[in-house]
Image (cartoon, rainbow, N blue to C red; front, side, top):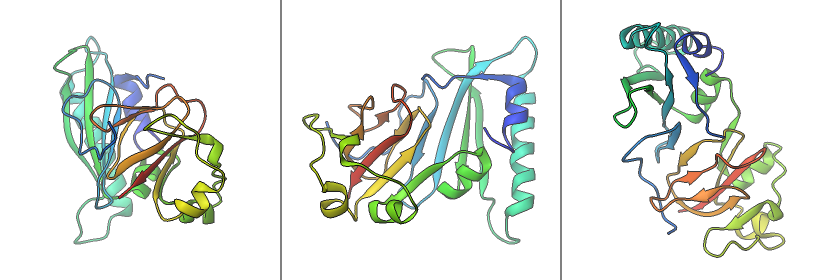
Amino acid sequence: MGKYGKTGMCLFLCMVFLSGCGQANGPDKIESTTLVLNGKGSVTAYLVGNFAREYYSLQELENMVTGEASGYNDNVSVAGQDDVVKVETVELLESDSSKAMITFRYDSVDTYCDYNDVELFYGTVNEAIAAGYALKDEDIFSVKDGSQAQNGYLRQQASKQHVLITQEHIIFYCPYSVTYISDGAVLNEDGSVDMRACEGTGIILMKK
């Protein structure tokens, strides 16, 4: 969490960021922090952490995170429009009641980044290059055979494809089929990408 969510969350959670190719629609089961990039631009974040139930109640946690989201919305939302950040659920994990999961819905990647004070780029390769990201062919590997991208692949063949660039080492669900990923990343059977073993900046290249 960042400048809006971090203070309250730290009171309740010790955050756990455990550090077939196809489109992933979303998780069936959550066990660790997961981010879902939806096709229309919104973001769903499933934040998982150890829950200090001996000190706080689940209701207190819910009151805290909804209050922080409300404060953020009051500062940035336009009158008459939906809130840009919504807290959808606050609950204990079914598989492990010592952990809590908070589900956030953000109207855009930009809102997610601003609210959590993190850097995450999502757009086309051309847009990433224009934004100053130094994308290198040698940094991505095919999900089909593990081969390194050929010289010039990103700027020539994949320039209009979508790319996700992040330093968050969590699990990602992308709106399009994943074709290349960073070293250390793993494409799961359900189409999600596990980036918990990545070092530094992680990259996911995808194709409609």
